[in-house]
Image 1 (tube, rainbow, N blue to C red):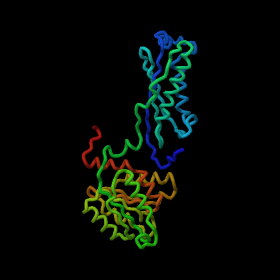
Image 2 (tube, one colour):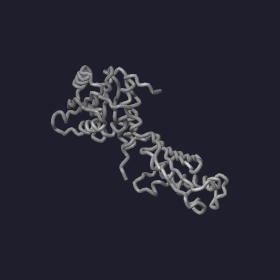
Image 3 (tube, rainbow, N blue to C red):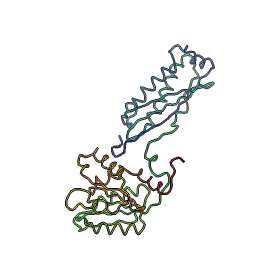
Image 4 (tube, rainbow, N blue to C red):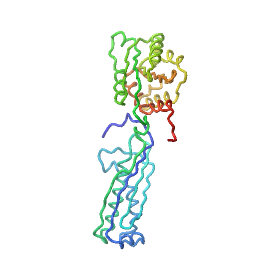
Amino acid sequence: MVDITHKIITQRTATAQAIVKVGTPETMQAIVDKTVPKGDVLEVARTAGLFAVKNTSNAIPDCHPIPIEYTGIEYELLEDSILIRVTVKAIYRTGVEVEAMHGASIVALTMYDMLKPIDKQVEISTIKLLHKKGGKSDFGAKKRLDLSVAVIVCSDSVSAGKKEDRAGKVITDKITNLGLKVSHYAIIPDEIKDIQTTINQLCEDQKELIILSGGTGLSNRDVTPEAIIPLLDRRIPGIEEAIRSYGQQRTPYAMLSRSVVGFKGNTLIMALPGSTAGASESIDAVFPSVLHLFQLLNGFNHGQ
């Protein structure tokens, strides 16, 4: 199966449909009157659909077992057909589109099985996804952003040439994959003065997003938070908490990190861990959702 451990947990919703067409008006009347020999078509099919949604991963190899928290099955009886709609909800790392479509398919197939003895013209059609919600595309920026981004690596050993920078490169790659361009990349030592001078210069250059990696631990040379906090006009504790919470689910040492996020003017500054895994996971934890901040700065209206 595809690795989804890096994804954040969100509420996922999907609705799928299927259509069962009957051959005669008498078949529709038998469904309504509940006189089909095999039983109450609508209720038996509903029960089958509920079982199908919950057991999708047992039927389709690459589907992950998902803790389904809601399944709704609705019918619309038309003149010669039954429109089936299946809505599925879960709070999980991956979507429930296949679960909804699997449910709709089995509801339709159950109807077919129950009706075929009295109607040889029954057919199933138009199994499709109607809509889904809760994935990454729903929580990022609603339109492409043209941001000026800087990535700064704070490390004595990397700046001295004793170690290769990996964390900064991982951050750069992930930011690039989000459709943003890193216009400035630099490596500086763990010195408060150097960090503050770099940030002030980047803010003067109107960089809109500055991501620092390193110096957020608890050793004597980890001074990035001490350098950044005095420069911030507004901290954003929610983003800091999200980063630590995400990391804590993957390693018990994440609670020892002191990530800092906030605004200096209209520049968003993020101080992330210096380890490659810590930097990568921090980006996964809050991007692309964090980009919504820039829409808010530009007067985005949630009601629109």
